[in-house]
Length: 331
Image 1 (cartoon, helix red, strand yellow):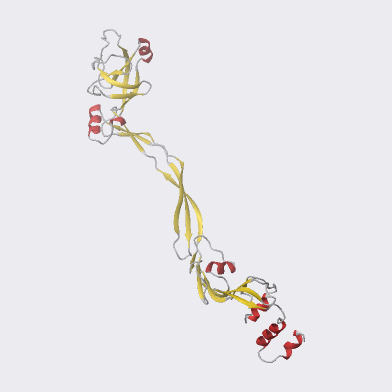
Image 2 (tube, helix red, strand yellow):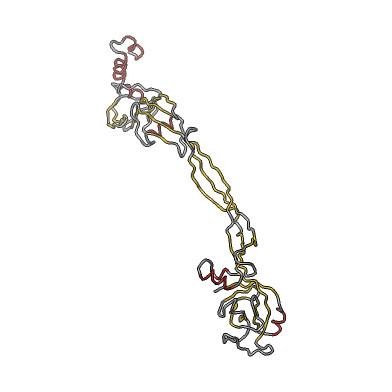
């Protein structure tokens, strides 16, 4: 008798009768042993059904659109097959405060959101966590955070460098170079959970687009003794002292010269004559165009802001002649 003739006239509950008919029709089919995974449960069962759909009906399971099955319903069953089934359960999705009910057979929160085509941004918050298991009537909350990048440019104030000038009265000053401001660019990530909440700002990187040039201020000190007093109190290093002076040149072989300086060192390049009231003997100096120098000699014509530079030959001394220079006190 055909299955189509049996079903309409069967007695009792229709699903039970259908299972009975399937079982009777398969009575001549050899038994197969398969692995059946139902949610978290796993077991080895014996069946004479031939397709996945027949097997599920044999187990009293009717597939719903949201259910998950490892093989298509019409797939054939063979000895040793594995069938994994997960029944969909109701869950409540709350996205930015808007709620909707869905059914899902996903194994965890993250998979359930993916099945609903809900993608998460790097700063979105999910509760429970995406790794959390799905239970019937679970409420999944997603709070989205909008983010964007801002590049902010700010000015860098020029640093101030001070020099000292004995040609200016004590307490006076003038700007030698106004300097220029620099520019810094900062990359900031802005996070905005929702319009009612103040955004958070995270600094990601910073770079200098243009470095500032120092502002140079000359400060009057009146004379060297004042400058030395300032340095002695520790408010400035003597290496910062810049003295504007009138320079001449001499050699150890000049008329009336002995070749030996007041410090006992032989005259020559690097030994300069100074007024000890302005620059004490033994002071180390640096003179642009001349180099390092040692205040090791004095001279009858060297007074105040005068300095006499030693050279090794008369020709060098004559070429230098007389000129204004800047003298930097090193120590």
